[in-house]
Image 1 (cartoon, one colour):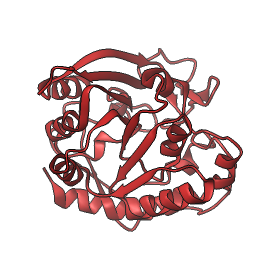
Image 2 (cartoon, one colour):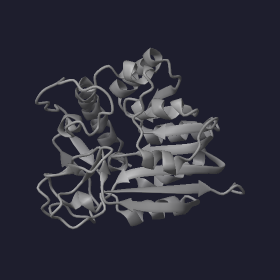
Image 3 (cartoon, one colour):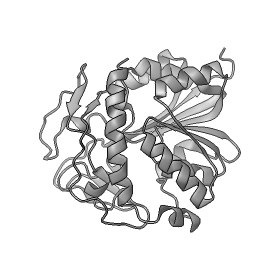
Length: 286
């Protein structure tokens, strides 16, 4: 585990979160008017969550967490970014949607949660999350440790195969990459999404954002994700690959095929850009 790199990422995310939220308009008003930032794939994988306790890992600034709470779940969101959690708490208060938000490095949080015997019906994580984690086995073990028997983990993530390309669709990154990759910092991907990541109002906000803090990413293949969850004692129930990415215009020429689903240019063969899976903790698990 590389907590030193996690700490560098915390600083980078603090800076980037300010830029991201500057584009999103009146978010409290959006939620008060009944808005939701969830996509259909997330709701489909989660099923009916009314009355269930739900842990949202790497919840960012809380928009998806509050959307889940609006569906009736008792939501706890965890994120490493001070700025993200402070914003999420304000948004919860101003929107009138109750949820708990806790700032902590995820691995530290898992250790504390185990000591306090905290358990949840659902654990949820989505979009650009595991690339910030330096140890996938600790991640999977932490998830298994906070799931109630019969509980389920739901994961929606950008497909690692797509991440071998640069923005011009040229092969650039090694799929089998065992070392962290140093980057210039978390960028303003919300501005770069051209509205794809904004379900509500849009403000110009911060222009030409440059992050003063470098960041470090870890690349995990599909086999590594599934194997880590299985080693942690979880049973894979379902896995689906999608030829589009929800909200994210990560490459040149991506087009909205409806519902803010972004697909590659028409002249390209389809490749997986996103995947979803659910994994359950057996009821007789110790």
